[in-house]
Length: 78
Image (tube, rainbow, N blue to C red; front, side):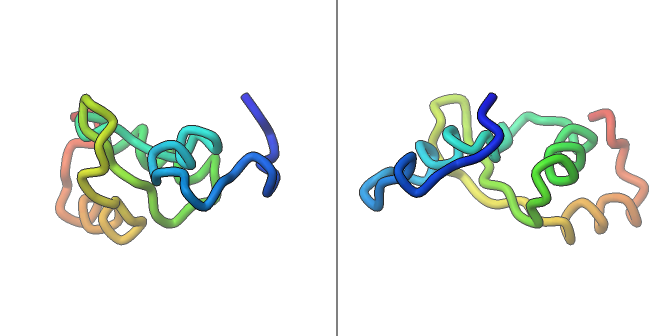
């Protein structure tokens, strides 16, 4: 896994998912909340793109979404 992404790695014509793949900052729609929170912590990101099985962007998850789930006692292993 790359530890740094340089400007030469990115191209303005790249799709969001291509860029997210380069920096490894995206989650799958079916990903457990626990894993989403872990990726946010490891990457230092407050938002992560959410993709479906075909790698199409379907949304964005934020730290507020994770906190809201925590306060609502959502099972983080689901």
